[in-house]
Length: 219
Ligand SMILES: [Zn+2]
Ligand SMILES: [Zn+2]
Image 1: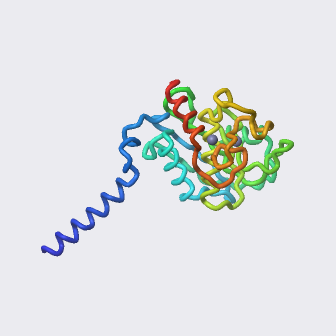
Image 2 (image 1 turned 90 degrees about the horizontal axis):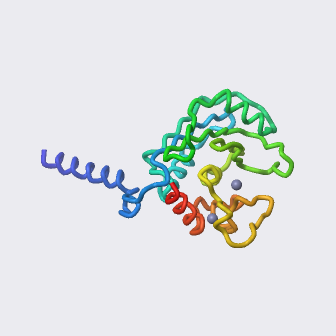
């Protein structure tokens, strides 16, 4: 019986330490997030199923950088559609969304954010956009062009596009010209997730973190 109690206490200790690891930093625990809650409604195809590891990285980074607490992010993934469209125009993406979106964001400026994610394969047809991996095509609508990415890259694309939805990069807050004038709403730091190319970092750099804080104070 004594052995059983010790085993039970050991199990309890390991379970609670696991459940609280996100909140080691007391500043994060008490910090007010940019959003109280967030819903990501994903509509994938059979060729572009989101990787749960990527979605968990996304949630952890949203919390770490003060966008929304991970436990308050709800990700709804629809049953995948059988779609073999090699190239998408923006209006095709809008039609896809119109057919499948069930959650809407009535007020994108309040502290609840609802984003629709077209998780598709293929490319975007806009000239100069053939190689893009993701796109914000409406206020609360993004597309991920999935190509069997490693989970970290998949997470980077998702974080980057949601970064645009929340208002990054605000060029008025930046000194100097954009690194790529054709992609002005991006960060000049290639180690930042908001750089115009995905270089592998899932993190917002200090300038983008400052933008998130100032967006938070504006609300
Ligand atoms: Zn971008
Ligand atoms: Zn940045």
